[in-house]
Each structure stands twice: as C-alpha cells, then as structure tokens.
Image (cartoon, rainbow, N blue to C red; front, side, top):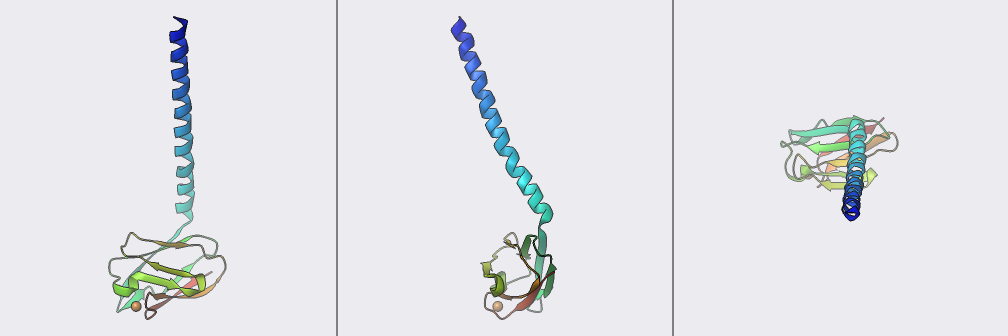
Length: 124
Ligand SMILES: [Cu+2]
C-alpha cells in the first residue's frame, strides 16, 4: 500500500521536473528573439531601371541590419557583395535575409554578384 503512494510521488516529481525543463527552455529563446527583432534595422531593396532602389541606404552602427530583396529584383542582383565587410551572399527569394552588424561609421559600396549594379550603405 505505501509503495503505491511512493510510485505516485515519484511520477509527480518526474512530471514536475520535465515541466520545469520544458518551460525554462521554451522561455529563454523567446526573450532573445524579442529583443533582437526590436533592434534590427530592416531594409527591403527593390529594382528600378536595372538599379537597386534605393541606391543608398542609411543605418546605425552597432545595431543589426537585415537586408532582403523584394520580388522585383532579378538575375545577378539577387546576390549582394559588400567587399569592405567581407559579405557575399545570394538571396534567392524575398524571404531570404542578409544580416550583419556594422561596427563603426563609414560608407561601404555594395554590388550585385557580378559587380555591375552598385549601391551605397552609409553607416552613421
Ligand atoms: Cu549584376
């Protein structure tokens, strides 16, 4: 008889421990995601007359930048190269993003994957 209560006690303890683990793991990433998205400088580039639009973008230093390309952007312009920052990335769909954090102020040229279409990123 006493054994039954012992087993039930163990089961309750196990459920509480599992519940605690699941709850604590679920909580931490949610908080991180929220603070990150609040700080991200989101930029969506389009294409006009075979150029990126806008051709010049302004961002703040020390804050993450996320660049995506809308569906008007085609061909080699779906690849972005920022030589100064060591970035070379293909963004095949409008959902793809290029994320980086510019550490200091300055002006960086960005180009398409073939280097023919150019734009400017001004970090302030
Ligand atoms: Cu190109």
